[in-house]
Length: 320
Image (cartoon, rainbow, N blue to C red; front, side, top):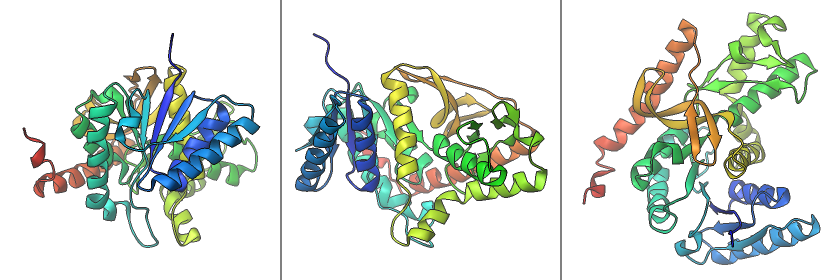
């Protein structure tokens, strides 16, 4: 008898809990496992979500993990665990603290869920995706970072704010690292199929691009304690459902580049076709010269942080 789909969410803070809740409400899978540092908190949230699923007439069962062995058989494992940003803190400030956390959980996934597709959400996202890939040893198509969907959603919102029409019809595209060096692409952004460059002037588009790059920081500053989680959680579940339903939809995701856009052995956000195998195909687009330069700078920013990890011998204990 075929088993139901299973998703493990590592991290039971606002972000991880919201991801699990959306999956349960959508009936995206049969089992959701919550893995956190505090079992009682995870169990309490799991009970609450399972009861909500019953209220919604959904079949999803949410359970708390007593240990890493409970993630066995997962189709997808999502790593949301990590220290959040606080006002004035950049994603780069989180580098070593979150790299240690991701390394620990990546090793658990390798041992207990060796066939899973891994989605990384911890920041700095592109580097954490690199760490997860190196620590699991999985092929690149099975270790993805969630960023481009969120960044595109933020860009779409700012376009709507400017136009005051087209909500739900705006298709934005963002490449590069998840941070200040991201590369929003107005060339590939439309409203109901109409190019954004036909609707807004260059100054207005430039303002939207700037706001998109600072979208996460703006929310951090407004909240004062913590970071965004509703939009990031929804963006993550879009990836999960594309995998579980084998939709072959195209989304921008962080992936290890292998002769893609002229780069190899570094993680960055590019459009990929997502299906049952994870990143089924990297989609290559023709970039304008300025966009190529900005993408180069974005890749270099991620490479600098990866080099920092190597210089600190972060990966040395991986050698057997």
